[in-house]
Amino acid sequence: MSQPPTSQATSTPLSSAESKPHVVLGVAAGIAAYKSCELLRRFTESGHDVTVVPTAAALEFVGTATWSALSGKPVSTDVWSDVHQVRHVRIGQTADLVVVAPATADLLAKAAHGLADDLLTNTLLTARCPVVFAPAMHTEMWEHPATVANVATLRARGALVVEPAEGRLTGADSGKGRLPEPEEIFELCRDVLVRGVSAPDLAGRHVVVSAGGTREYLDPVRFLGNRSSGLQGYALARVAAARGAEVTLIAANVALPDPAGVKVVSVETTEELRDAVMAAAASADAVVMAAAPADFRPLAVSEAKIKRATDGTAPDIALTQNPDILKSLAADRAHPGQVVVGFAAETGDATGSVLELGRAKLARKGCDLLVVNDVSGGAVFGEPDNQAVILDTDGGAVEVPRGSKSAVAQVIWDQVATRLE
Ligand code: CTP
Image 1 (cartoon, rainbow, N blue to C red):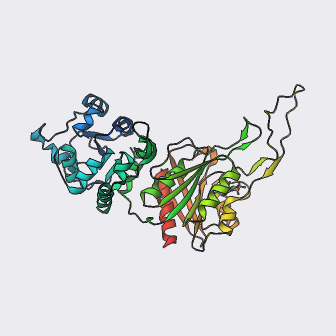
Image 2: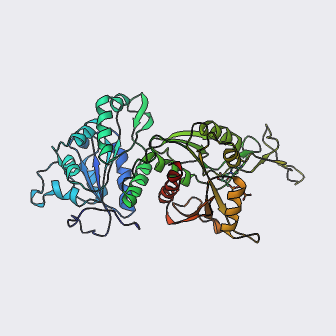
C-alpha cells in the first residue's frame, strides 16, 4: 500500500511486517462473518498486515482455520493464549486501524460500555487508532433504542459506525441491517487509514451525487454509451455518508455495490437522469454532477431491432441534443445557498489547455466548482486513482494530488463544506 498509516501507536509492532499498515479485523458473531473473508483478502492483497480477532461465538460461523490461513497468522479469541506476549493489550496498541465486521448489537453494546471479557473487546479498549464498526443485524435490533444509543455513544467518541445496507437479511425477511459489501468496507477503511475518521461536518445536510454514464437506445438492444465506471461518483457518495450527510446517489448504469448508508436511484438515459437529479435536488444542500450524461440521443428509438441491410449500407441515425442538466441546475437552484459542482473530463486541444477549457466550461455551466480531470490517453476511466484541479468562480484553483478516488472526494467535500458554512 502506498499511503502511510496515521497510527498514534508508539509500541513495537507485533509482526515482522513493520512497514505495512497494521489492521485488526474484529469479527463478531453474525452470519455475515463469511463476507469478512473477502474483506480480509482485500487487505492482505493490497499490502496490509492483518490480525484477525474473532469472538468465540463468531467461530460458529467461520472457523479459526479459515482466518488463520487467510491472514497467515495464529488466531485466538481469548486473553489466555500466549499470555507472555500480553496480546490483549499489544494488539490494540500496535494497530493502525481496527475494523469490526460484522459488528453485532451485542458487540456494539460491549464497546459502548467498555466491557472487556475477550480478546476483541480488550483490543477495542486499548486501541488508540481509528476504529470502524460495520454493523450487521436484524432491522429490529438495529432500530432498538439500546442499539441506537450505543451507536450514538460510539460515534460521539470518534468511531466510524457505518450505516448497514438495506436488503435481504438471514431467512426470508428483508430490511436495514445487511453488512455492506466487503469492497465498500475496504474502500472506507483505506480512506480512514489515510485521513483518520472524518468529523461529521456534513451532518444534517442532504447531498445529491450523480454517477456513471447514460445510455441512449437506438433499438431494444443497442445504445450509445460512454466509458464512465461510476467509481468517482460512488466514492463521493461513500465519503459524504461517512461525513454524516444524507446522500442520494443517482446511478446511471453502474456495476458497483451500493455505498453504505446511501439511497441509490438507478437510471439509464440522460432524460431519466435529469428527472431523478432534479427531483432529489429540490431538497438538497449540494449537488455534485459526477455522471457522464450522453450529450446526444437518437431522434427516434426503433421498437424493433434494426436489421443489417443486405446491400451493405449502414443505417443513418439522426441524433438530437440532450438537456444540459448541470447548466439547468446551476441556473435554476432550489434555494439560493445550494452548492452546485460539475466535472469536466478534458483533453486539451488547439483551442486551449486543459485548464483553459475548464475555466471556460465553469463559466458556461454557471456552477460553483468544476472538478477538472485531464483524460488524455484515457487516464482515469475505471482506474482506482484520480488527480484533479478544482476551479471556483473566484478564479481559485485547488490542486488535488494523485490519490484514491475517495481521497479526491474528500477534497471536493472540503470545498463544498466551506461553501455551505
Ligand atoms: N453534464 C450535464 N448534462 C449533460 C452533459 C454534461 O449535466 N447533458 C454535466 C456533467 O455531469 C459534468 C459537466 O456537465 O458535470 C461537464 O460535462 P462535459 O461532458 O465535460 O460537458 P459538455 O457540456 O458535454 O462539454 P463538452 O462539449 O466538452 O463535452
